[in-house]
Every structure is written in structure tokens, then in C-alpha cells.
Amino acid sequence: MKRSTSTNNRAAGILKAFAFLSVLAAYLFGLLGEEKDYQEKLLQAFPDMSIISSSGNGPVCFHADFPEGEKYVLLYKTMGWGGPALVATRIDTSGYVEEAKVLDHHETPAFFASLLKNDYFRQFQGKYIGDRFSIDEDVQAVSGATISSLGFNNALRKSCHYLAESEFQMEMAEDDMKISFADPGYLILLLFVLAYLGSRFGFSRIRILIQLSAVVIMGFILNYPLSMSHISSLFLGFFPNPESNITWYILLGSLLAMMAFAGKNLYCTWICPFGAIQDLLNKVSSISLSLPSWLKKYSRWSGGVIAWFSVCVIFISRNPALGTFEPFAALFSFKGFGIIWIVLPVLIFSSFFIRRMWCRFFCPVGFLLNGACKMRNRTMKQIHTKDENKEVKLYRQHHDHCA
Image (cartoon, rainbow, N blue to C red; front, side):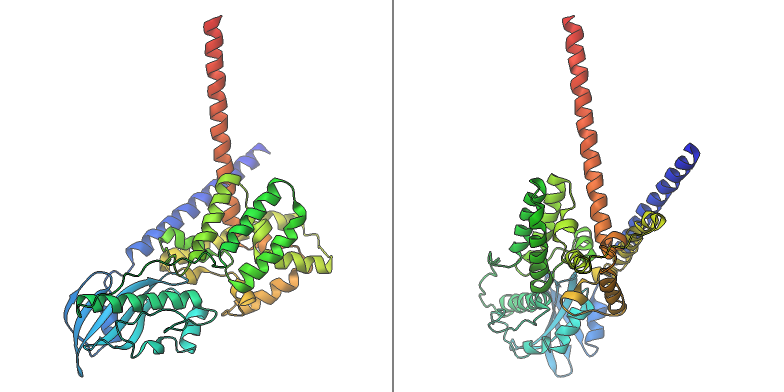
């Protein structure tokens, strides 16, 4: 029996080491393979362009020659929903935008497709570099892809205003960061506070109210449940503009604070809107099938395998959208692609009979959050044990000295 336990522990240790090393290798591979010089992509987007000179760093301004005459082309890297995006803006010598092209992006395919379908980029044609580029005033965001709209608009605004100042000697007002405290994203902070109070003082009856609120707020209003793209963006250093995506900071900040101070994964148990949907469906049927013990034992690792695969794909590609397999978007915004439309009905149907099937067996986010909480609590326990041993040692020394 002891040999079997020792063998299992050794095998688990080898798997953990392999997972860590493979994730580290994926991160380094993606970092080394990241394209730094975008001039080749620029020339692919504008094949008839001949670069005369360039200046600036962010944005980079190219003075170029085209068959119809000299123009300016500006490159700016912005942050959207899924990560960074590189936008090229062509402007004529009189200061009017001719076109905007996205050379590279990490947006969720469904969101970017929504921008193209609604001709989002066409509205910039003919705008003057001195315009304000204010959302809902002279630029219209696409409903359902608001954060992506804000990110790309930021690229156009920065590029145009840089050109206005550097080449046209125009005095442009500084773009002050405007964070609205009326943003519905702040309701996520309220959900975390209520979840902590409910868990801390045993108010379990308010859990259903918090879950219903999360479904409405995080699911249908914001369409912003926690996903692998949010977690991976943190490690990749993809920090969005707080003005356009304050919800990202609120969600991750609340989550990290809750885990650090409470040591509990309250997001999965109290807040996650997809988990709440599964709970509600299971309550409707009042059926909870008993699963075989061997299935419970081994299926809990499936979430870890999915998390490992997702993280490796994201780190290698440096594209958070490619490694996001959660069915949230398809459920709450009715936007999805590929196998998601097959997986989602299966999960919804199974929720009537198996409690939280996705959360218990497949969710990579839940696996990572639970693992992080265990590490935090184990570390805190070791610190407390060390402090207690130190106090006992000091007491004995003092007692021996007195004796």
C-alpha cells in the first residue's frame, strides 16, 4: 500500500514538473517568436507604397510615396478585448483619413467579425486629424463589440492627433483619461463584496440572489464572465486601456484580492454566471444523478488538461482568443464559432441531470483558481507553523534561562 502511494506521488510529481516546464517552454517560444518589425506587414497591406522616411515610436509615422502622390501612414498598437492589435492609418497631405487597416489583432473572432459586418472602419474615411474621435459623438461603437470598438478608435485617435501635432503643428488638447464611476463594471465589485459577506457570516440564502444578479450583470449586460483570455492576458502583459476596459481591472482585481485575503474561490461558487445557470437548471429538474467513484476521481483532472492545453496555445501564439474554449459568449451574447455550438447544448441539457457538469469536470478557470487557493492556503499554513515554532523556541529559551 505504501509502495502504491509512493508511486502515485512520484507520478503526480513528474506530471506537474512536465506541465510547468512545457508551459514555460511555450511562453519562451512565443516570446522569442513574437514579431517586432511590422514593416513587412505594412508593405503587404500597401503594396504600392514606397517609404520615404519614418519618425516616432508610438505611433510610428511613415512619410510614403504612392502612385497618386505622397501620403502619411501611421502605425499604432492598441489594446482591444482579446489583446493587442496593430492598426495602420493612411492620411493624405491635407490631413484627411483615407483608410484604416488592421494589420494584426488578437480579438475574439466573433467580435472582430461583428466590426467588419457593421462597416466599423469605413466610418473613419474622410475624418480630419483634428477631430475629437469621441465615441457616440462622431464615432459609433458596434453594439456587442463595444470594448473592441473603443480599442480601435483609440488607435485612430492617437495616430491622427500625433500627426496633427508633429507634421501640421496643430495644438491638440491632451487626451485625459476619463473613467466613469457609473460604469456597470463596478457592479462586479459589489457582487464580490456581497459574496464575501455571505460566505463570511453564513448568509447562504443570499447566494441565489447573487447568482441571479451575476447572470444579469456579468452575463447579459456586460457579457464578461471570467475566462482563460483574462488570466492569460495578465501573464502576457496585455493590459487594456482603463478608460475603455475598466471592467478587466475590476474583475481581476476583485478576484485576486478575494483569493489573497479570504483564501477562497468565491467566484466559482457564488458569482460565475455560467455556474449559476447550471445550478438553476438542476434545481428545475430536481434530479442529480450519482456518478461512479472512478469517474469522479479521474475526471477532476480533465479541467487541468484543458487548462494546460489552453495556456500552451495562448503562450505560443500570444493570442488569448485562440486558447479560449469556454461556451460563455455563445450563451450570453449568442456569438460563437465552431465546436462551441455543439458543446453548449450538451452542457445545457446535462445540467438538468448532473450538477455543474462543466464546472466540476471541464472548466479550466475553476481548476486554476482552486489550485491557486490551495497554494495560498498551504503557504499561509507553513508561515503560521513557522511562527508558532519560533514562539515555542523563544519560550523554551526564556524558561531555561529563568530556571
